[in-house]
Length: 177
Image (cartoon, rainbow, N blue to C red; front, side, top):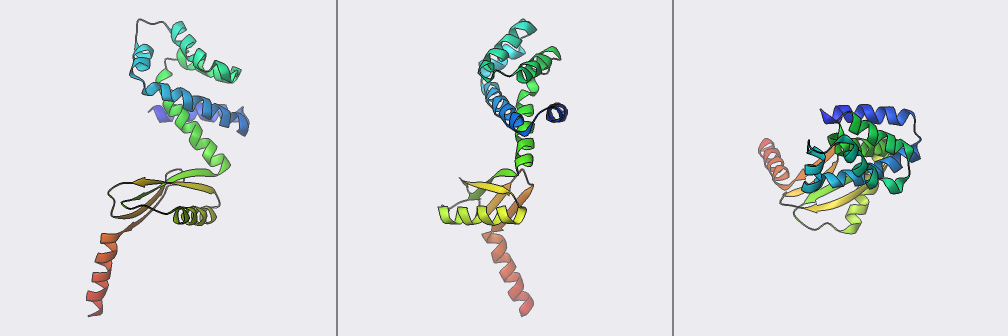
């Protein structure tokens, strides 16, 4: 639900803003959304005994260095409509919009073994050419038996599982006999 509301706000902001100011706002709201990971901050924001003016002042102080009337007005609007809790979703939607506009995406490579920098660069370059975008890949070590590349912004997932390849080889050999 929050994502749908956030998309509407981002759509309205995008119509009245340039790409550069959208990138700046995405950075500002990304930093502000980090505050929502702090339990004390969430308790203050969700406390019904604290009035809207105080909540607005807290949020405006957090973004004071940005010195942006658009950001300040958006925060005031969110406070006025009791939608402070959509700020993390709003930041996420802004980041997605900026990524789509600039065609710059970040993906993850999951594997149970270490992957060399050259392989990471080759994967990144190949995907970038294939999708006509700039894709940067980050390695994530986990217990996946193979290699899995996931670029969420593009909706791309490539999976090479050792067990699946072994089963396909066996299946091919059985068919050949």
